[in-house]
Length: 458
Image 1 (tube, rainbow, N blue to C red):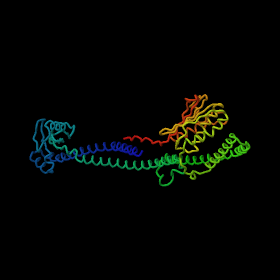
Image 2 (image 1 turned 180 degrees about the vertical axis):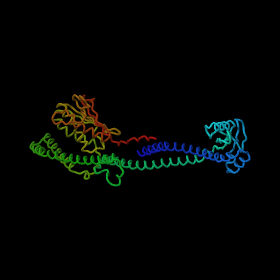
Image 3 (image 1 turned 135 degrees about the horizontal axis):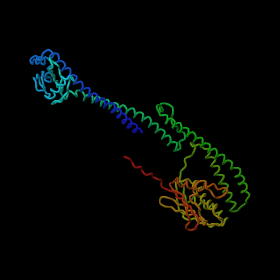
Image 4 (image 1 turned 90 degrees about the vertical axis):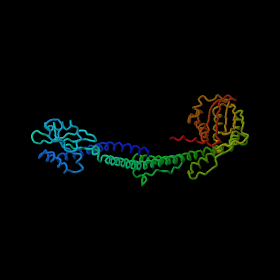
């Protein structure tokens, strides 16, 4: 923007300067020409009194000798003639005889007293002077070519300097204005980037010395940005309070569930139910603590876990329910280590969402399998079943498209997809090659994504 303003100022000032200075220079040139011929007219008029007194050649020669020595070689007098033929000439003449005759003819007819004609090296001014009777004398004054442009070059240089000065001043003013505007725009962009990175306390200064001379549009944009940042802070605070309140409301039904599971006695099913209720209580407590915690109090935790260990743990948890429902299940590829750059709790929630999707959308007795594939740059988790598959895979991945009846919010696969995208991976839906039903493929990238350098424009 800064250079655009400078270029616009240069173009505008240059056009204005040319529009005024070119006609002014032409006028100076015409003024110099008129000044030279006016001086020649005065020189010719100075010999008029002498011609009115006498037309003798010696007297006219003495009159020419009494003039300025610088003009003696440029003035000549053509003594009266009776016709258009050649007459006596006093001085150094440069005019053609036809031009002298024409000037004399105009003087006798009264049509004009001055006549300009071309001559070698310049122009001659021919002035007719009436003497005794009908006779006419012609005074010739030579005007050199360089005299017509005397001072014109200097005038053009001065005008060019004025034009360059105007352009330089306009560039300085435009650069000053552009730097102020660009600086404000850069501060606004930096504040937007800082807000996007999580700094909720950033604001754009709209008062003080930094905001002096700002356009109203940028000032309004700064006010709008500050209002947006305040609104984001209020919304996040309200969201944390809402999450904490909703989680707190779950304590009562969880207490009832814990008391009921305590009376179930012994057995694998009872132990699994009590374990699930205890884990649910821990998750609710963690949600409440995370919602009540301010962004400054968030502890720095190491990001990363062993995907194979987490998958073995979660499949073992779901295996108890699978045995109760008569489902055959299989886990393959989770024997070795499979490190991934996600937190353990987030990966466990994603695996629970994938397995819960099988139990929720397939009838009892439907077999499922979990396969873990470790490649050079990623870890792939395949969860397949022997059900009917997905009627619309794209709709199943959209947030809020849950079709599982009561209790289905459609957020499970969306949570898994977002976890995969944080590592540069993805979530894909297809058909299982081994079981023939639906298959969900979770790909987690284990290498950091290096952005490609942008091509530099010339």
